[in-house]
Length: 361
Image (tube, rainbow, N blue to C red; front, side, top):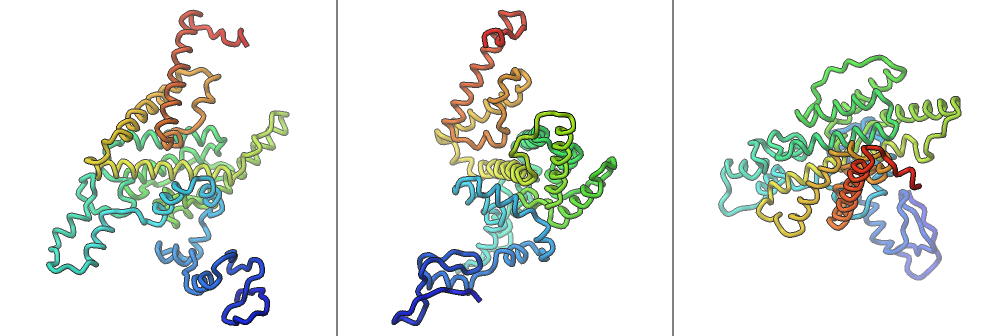
């Protein structure tokens, strides 16, 4: 039972909190009666998640909640609401519409065909739209966008010093699941010093569910493998008198940012589904400009190889993060990157492809 500190007064119905009491780590600083009523009746989050996903408590403990919390705290409130809807399957889907329709008391009940019609995928693939369906729908209106998202995650992993065997495994797993809605790979990979760890991580992720991977619910073993990799890299740099790893490089940082990339991809693919559903409503001025700017962003990221090393700071943000910016930010970036590209072309032209910028610095 929670312990409350209180002072003597005439109202003995509830104690008066002198400073701040805690009930299951929840600070109570205002409406004490309401907080206690809530605490007496609420369902603990772990119980809710396990019941909703048919998990055992052991499966719940396999998930890297610490890294997810770090990611979640790093995003603004508006984005947290979207992510919460994603991870708990609270997004509006055809299957949800069907459940609501069946629970509604109608004077004239619908026939079965009418219920089936409202449950259909808005991208017209003919299947019922359950929560993760938009991720692997065969009628994805922008399949190139899925490929681009995967490439962006792969580039980020390489840039962040990810354990090399992990990169092709995670990329292959995500690509395969997005194509089929399930993992159909029989794994064959070279034995290395983390072979057992990788095997364990794949087993645990299968137990958690690969569709949960796209919600940011990753196995803790992925994080542990990366911690060992950073430790190896750090020791190697010490032994070779090389510059140390960046201070922020840690397994928790790596996992939180992997979660960020994957969740951004899920939200991006969700938006493609929404555009298909609301195609008659999305062509307002802002969305029209946004589409035009995204086309430019895609072009510049596809042409990254045309820029000089000195320009990498303008392209260091992963594509999946860049496209979440508002229009004014995207427009400013597109203008800047175009000017840089034009300047580079002009310099190469007048110097016969020799970069002379270092001569002026």
